[in-house]
Length: 435
Image (cartoon, rainbow, N blue to C red):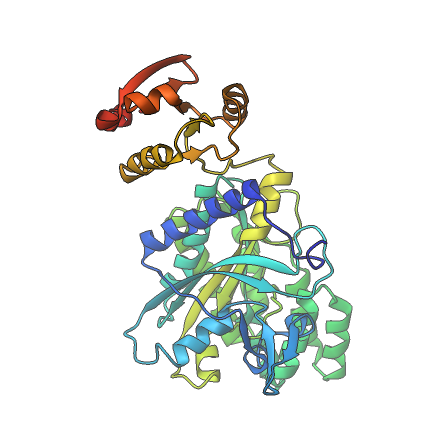
């Protein structure tokens, strides 16, 4: 029997790779001051219905519990963290930095980089509208990818305030704005243009939005930038003061990120949109070569905590795609991580009293020495073959002679030498097994 489609088992090597990525994320939490939390896998439907966006609403695993409440398997985690801010952390001093490692569920059509169950590692920073907080999210994202070994990373960066401010100038309500931005994000550009026409936007507004959507990215790379392209976008936006300020905010964030050591290609995309409807400002995606999907994404969501009944709380964050990174590293980079196993196997012959075997194993483990006991009661030659195949470095051997003399035999499998050690001097093993 196989698991449900799109929900993979993780075998030891895959789990070890996942855990390596998680360990890196947790190290960056420590470096930047993020406190890790955990939220339930099952949440109420309303939490994600409000502002998670069309794409997520269409793909949630939803069901009714025994009391008739509509629930979901969480499709993402930012909404859950915003719920925490509105409730458990409502009186917490700000700023507050929250991290999470969580599995999420979406009823996607399984394909490369898209699973129905997937893992994310998040960074969420609450309480500040300063561009320094936006930059911090770029910096932690860059740091995680660099520490994992994904040095060819790049960023796509935009600002939803640019488009929203233009649309607001035409009295277009937020729900309709969401539809337009979702169409752009899902590359249904003609659908967005048709909707704009139906709304009666004048030619100047339509032309501006079209130029923003179709404008080539402004590339920042190794302290070089096309300033003419920056000025061109600023000139296009000059009739819309609020949109122009959003663009200026975006450029400031990029320049601060470069000053902060983010030395990879940054693509500034003035007409960029993301599917989640709760974004209010700076947005971004983090990519890797030869793959179109993003491996990390996020942005600013200043109204979400308030939407859930909390105090007005500015916020910015991201969700790193752990499962996608794993697949990229295995399939595109050929990287494997071996599971951590003890370096010592304890072998005993069938005639030995098992009480002596477990006594020796307990003594070694009490000294912090990991080991595996052979529980198959095989011949010594078979045990040796197994130990070499599984890359053990040492073999502790207990036969009838060792039991009678209250000793053990330690065999170095690399050097092919062995020594006898009295059980009352077993602490000597610690020095002998050091590399």
